[in-house]
Image 1: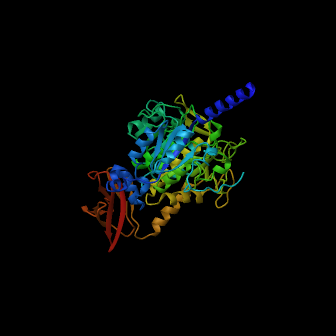
Image 2: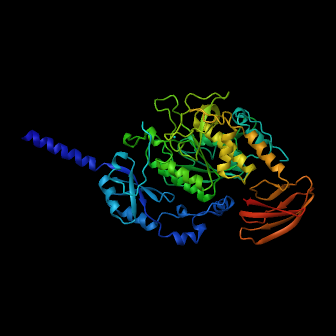
Image 3: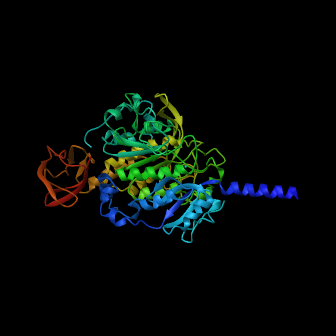
Length: 540
């Protein structure tokens, strides 16, 4: 009898411990009651640069842009046993921690739509009837710029990104957000002096520790940044040395938890609100410190993980998200990770200096049988700035992704009217295997000279085409005239159609001064030979 009683007590004690286990979960809300108020004041949600990007690519504001209802956050924070760790306006959700009992009790709130536990085995009791069902298959111009790339020559020349640089497209006016584990010594190392001196670091944030000090954390993000923005004269040049940067920390280098996914989505939402053009992430998620949260290959379908859902929304806002495919190619788990599995993310594998696929580069396809990775860049024997501030070689899709990110920024600078979808498709179609592919290489190594020549030819064949550059610009815009035209009448309008200025420009002096304009989007109307051409420009 005593033995049975003891066993019963032990069972009950174990059960209580299990019930008291703190769980990670996402709680989703049904609506956004403040929608009308925010829609009437777009600048309360997004910067002018972000709004200009939406207008340029005809992307409407929608419910996803509205912040999470503040009163809902307050009520969840005040709920018994609940800690709020992150929020996402795009997914209308909070990342919370608490016991299963306390989290489940939140379903009684009339504004709560559903709960998703990071431990998927608990979700049978946490979902409502409206939760999406996921069908898994069974079973992370006229002047040139010449650089001496030094050690970094091969990694940009492999992609023919140097052709863009030679045509003066070096990332100027483009904004890139890097979301990573830390950026220590970016404020000190000589390799970043050029971007510091030119005020190319626009800001950043440490989402892990919730503070403004982003020159901290694990050096991985610093090395990633170096492949794009590093500069050591005659020894090392990144792939977009004149771009501007936001540096965000979402990765906890010590712990691997589902919260990092939520922090990444938060950082991406911030990048969108600032008007960023391209996001680079050399992160990926498949396993966690708590194995109950681990993903399976079936989850790599681009729509299951929280981070991949967020990445897909980022694309819908007009940005390009470039992500490393993962370094598990020679491990038992050899597949890509999230968010590299997302449909619209450009996922990058790694090759060596001769273009041969690296053994460690992760494989596709996705669980729903899509081509991933999309393309490759050098990630084996790639040159970076290391934790000592020195030029060194390293390995990883962590570096092939940013190498490519920088070249994409330069291409988009050259052809700013192309949408993110058009740029991504051009990159895929230029790759050396396209339309064929392999599970590890995707479509292979892109050729940006091919893309540049193709788009330049298309412009040259259009008799009405007038090329405006640089665009975006801070001080002046130059124009490449059609061959038969020697003079044009130029009128500047704002986005409301108000006429701001007019002048005549000539082929011998093809420049207009925009230094007096405020930052934002404008339309330049050009009249010549009884024809009218309108061009969108961005003033930085």
